[in-house]
Amino acid sequence: GENVEQHPSTLSVQEGDSAVIKCTYSDSASNYFPWYKQELGKRPQLIIDIRSNVGEKKDQRIAVTLNKTAKHFSLHITETQPEDSAVYFCAAGGVTSGTYKYIFGTGTRLKVLA
Amino acid sequence: DAGITQSPRYKITETGRQVTLMCHQTWSHSYMFWYRQDLGHGLRLIYYSAAADITDKGEVPDGYVVSRSKTENFPLTLESATRSQTSVYFCASRRQGLEQFFGPGTRLTVL
Image (tube, rainbow over all chains, first blue to last red; front, top):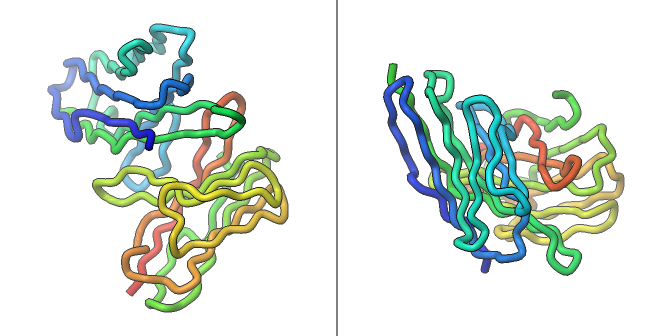
């Protein structure tokens, strides 16, 4: 069945450095790619998303890039801060023949070291 | 955001007991979802509902039952709880476009 692979599973960076998390999806009908941030004990919260008609989207220190041909998309966080420490999930979503699908990656635990 | 709520937030039960987790949303979103979150597995879809009286299985539906008699409510029932169902359960609804918005979660422990 369809799946979303996410790498790495853990990532440690020094404060001020950049972090990159990558996801690969299998369903070619996917056209919506959100990223969620989940802090310890909290709910996942949407931080940025991109649709298949766009190659890149930025929001302050975070950006997402999409390569639809290769079926992969990435989250980039620049100038990392301790409050960026959390688990990040990617997802691939879309509607195929009227059926709504939304599949999550397994998550990346990001640690920003002060 | 109080638009989607879950109750209880914490629950401890014993194997074999029936447990119902409640989810309520105030936006009148048509789609609602139940996920479980376990270490190493991320978020796995249990059941979802496209509208009142329409439900469908997700990736891990065994041992769970759902109903949706009203648009705003989507309860999840564990008919006979097992230790493997110890998890954090998140309810979500589909907001504008394709994005999902999550409730605060229910931490369930089955002894």
